[in-house]
Image (cartoon, rainbow, N blue to C red):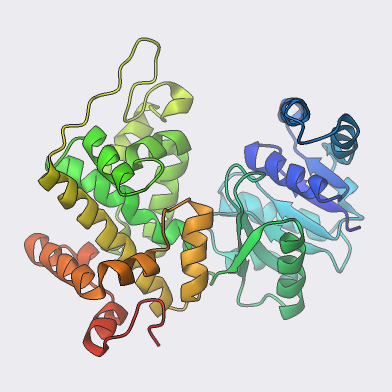
Length: 387
């Protein structure tokens, strides 16, 4: 069975290592930080102990899985790997340097992959002598639990590399979708309005954070946007938003929020720091939502219209197929329904009318309807089968 190399022993890298080892692969988990490697090893031991106590693993199976992961500070241990996945800091320059080092060490047929959530795969591939071996393999956190993996070929990626990588990740029990190499790929692109429109409504004074969260939970989302941003951490969520915005040449649809930026600048990162939009310190109480039926509808319609529009735009620009875009949003971020199916249920005309109302009122191009949405309304097409 193929040997797998993982670069980066943080939560994501360690999680991917667990996924590959669970599937039976020998895994080498690399980091330059000894403490990070030790932490990853201890965390895995705790996870396996819990799984054993719950009867999901036998003690022998847990021990065998743990023994398949080798913790290393030497990239030279990757010489036998057939696939190496990088899961380090979201810095293009640092990633490119790592891939250059890897290419000089690994087999000529080794696939080099990045777990980046928003950086260009083509830009990463440009660092290589053989860029055709580079591909994006984007897991979602926590990798052992979240089923979705986005497979992102660069413009130069060889077709056999795409086929091999996708089949391998499928064999790990994951749900894969093929995404175009554009900022945010599918999930992190389409999900931006969930956060952005919630922030905008609070900044406008339309509603408080707790009310926005509650209104969207009532719509079927497991967490409201402010709860979710605090859970993800503003050092991650804000940076992804800013990256997508700048890579789309400052398109207003992806404009970040000053409110969230100020939290990041203050070090109020969410749950991980004890404070974010909400206060998680001992003795603190979460605010009570102040919802009326009318306000609930306003919140829900504004957020949902923008999410559906973004999903339609992803279809329009061939970021993914309609089926895979809906699959990505339900499996990658646990949305209660696929957004295109939701738009068909709600009615494309209703979505268009809400966007046009907001566009007229605010004069803000973040609300501009996708041409494909207009086409579906004009020609009676469904959003799931728009062509």
